[in-house]
Length: 553
Image 1 (cartoon, helix red, strand yellow):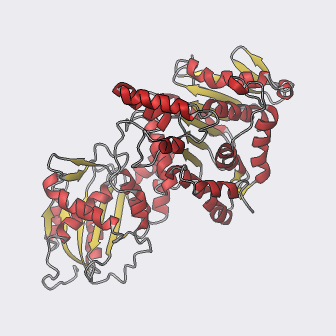
Image 2 (cartoon, helix red, strand yellow; image 1 turned 180 degrees about the vertical axis):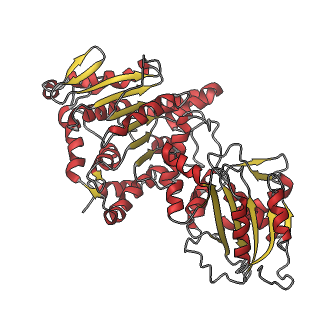
């Protein structure tokens, strides 16, 4: 079995003009060919070919220099986007992907591709009674994709036999299906039963209302598809646009595993100069086709002359989220650290330093154990426990929020405590149990919200050390932890919760260059990273030996 176009895509991936995230998208699909068949997934080449043949066989360009000519897809469009989305099937035969997130700059054919996908979902997918909607913040914006679809239909003699244009709708009588534009200002968004959604410029959505209402309406369909096409926007951790961008990056980097989510992002890479043609080529896969280098050069010159236009150029032509948070630890560095499973028996009797970062009683709490190496420049072993109230897992499952807490519980990465609040007695019990095996020298804690459990653990015979979460306490150990990761000296065992948390972390910096993890700007939980830094904080100030140890009984 081969993925149609896989050879040509692999060749493209090594070119210097292919950005890191695009390479990760390609690599994900290549890896899926080896990984997913064992899980019952099937790559259906006929289904993948069908969508490409529908578009290229029946649709025409409707404006510009190619108006009236058959719509010929570029290799990156059919091999890297359409064939994976429509070719993969679940074990039950339905389409694998439920949400497809495609983030590319303007002038790269987003609206044309969205219109073509909308027509296919309405007519070519053969779904009886299909409801397909082009959605945006305003109905006029939604009409951009829908009007492109109407123009394509008008230019196609074949499709005109199956579908007709109404004032604000494309209707296929044989299937009883329709394709309509919708905006947040539409009269009603409730009561819809979408089979297909084409959501345009998600970065411009001021809130998540349109996305959530339409997405929840797909529940009654067997294989609905939400096709999101957008450019980068202004960084806002509370916006649906940034949320989906952040999820896409984490899926591509492997920090979040979601088989139903397709991600494709093109932009310049970190360190690239946005003013250089190489960065433009990485961001714009259709450079030289639908967008010309001369145009970008002129726009870039304008951006350099006008600071007010610089961010506009970066977002719309470089696909760079402006005012964007800077991730602290690169996922490439984390993934390069030893990920072999940590052997608990091999660590028995080893000296270690523990720390816990207690959440509120209704969120996740982390316990970290750091085992310094027994030889200079050796690898540090880390062991983590994470806790949540059982009812939080149920709530996350109902709302379909990511990451998948239920899967982490099932696989033993996450411990639940009964009820709707964290039971700190469970954490105390686990610390005592761990101390029977490992030599816990000290246990660090932030006194906020932890006075009772700290007092109880002190009564159990543990040495407790306060570690307040400020620059003075955390800067040196945070830099030490970062250095260990960069040097590949952290054995994390591939822990999925820690991978997710590392991908969330940003740091705040003071004028003296001190750093500390910044929970206020994190895109998700970071408690495991904070607990790890606290454990390292105690380890780096301790001598290499300690007084005689006896396990807690």
